[in-house]
Image 1 (cartoon, one colour):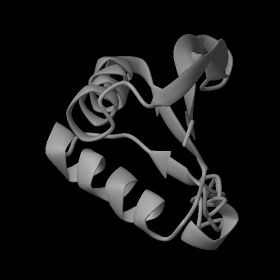
Image 2 (cartoon, rainbow, N blue to C red):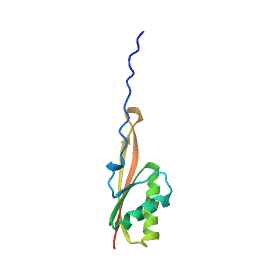
Image 3 (cartoon, rainbow, N blue to C red):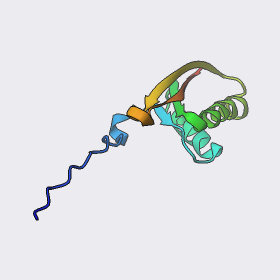
Image 4 (cartoon, rainbow, N blue to C red):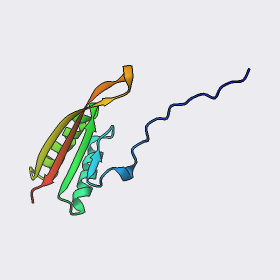
Length: 109
């Protein structure tokens, strides 16, 4: 009995850090202040605009980061634009909708 080689499905290629724009921070499971520090480091380089992106449960963390940075560090000196969306994740029976958010923070000064 000879065995046939197994067909393996390839997982989608992981997103590389080089594929993410420099003015974008992806929000995940880290503490809020870790992301707030990253935002402040970005603005200390002289940048005027930044995008926070999150999906699913991380959406509330992204909102918290935007509010902490705006209220604590800039005393209301940031303008915020919010884009909401939905992505379909998975294939076939495993397909499901995942909510997304993009918060664009722009320095007013």
